[in-house]
Image (cartoon, rainbow, N blue to C red; front, side, top):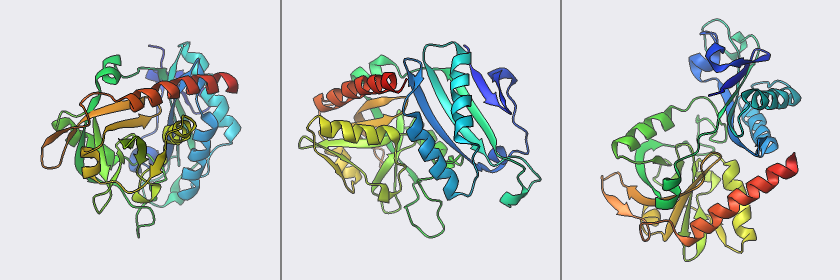
Length: 298
């Protein structure tokens, strides 16, 4: 396993990469990050991920290294792995300093790029579909007083960690989180789509979800395929009665949902209990488009 990490100005073997215990990313989750994968050895949608990284950093007042430096570190890490395909995690912490919440205590931002051999979900999961569980953890609503903007992809991921632990108790593959009033928001590390009456539906950003890069591409791709896509408020009952459902994320791509565990510990079958034709069509088209876009990007 040729895992490599760019840290403190160079690429190291993962076993040799170290972050100081006084780094604010370690102490407080005071960091921003992005996750992506390669297709054909090329990072997919790198510009879009770096755009979002910049937006996240701006919202919390974190000054990033030069974009060219982040790109250089990312590409160097990919090459160093000598793997055909990689999982990439790009992280910038506010840096290290004396213990204290004041951001001014940090010395300088620290760039970390992890490049690991890509491990995709088992093929049977795409063939058979997965179970998801509604969990009690909640997403912040955009604009809620005192809440961290959900568009910030930060290292503070405790809601999702707690949600996944709850989902595992339901023997579910992924946790689904709602907003404060019970509307569906997103998975712990994924976005959610339903199929109803041959139309795709996905929760809007206003319920407190992170705008996924894969989500954005799937919406555009579905419309090119002639499918209608609605961004609208959805409730658990909408998922229970959906004809099909799927998750999207950078590594998973399009993952079919076939079962739902509710907060009442009831298990519901989604649609016919197997991946639907629209889900399959969108999933296959997404993989093809991602490969073509990566080749074109060079």
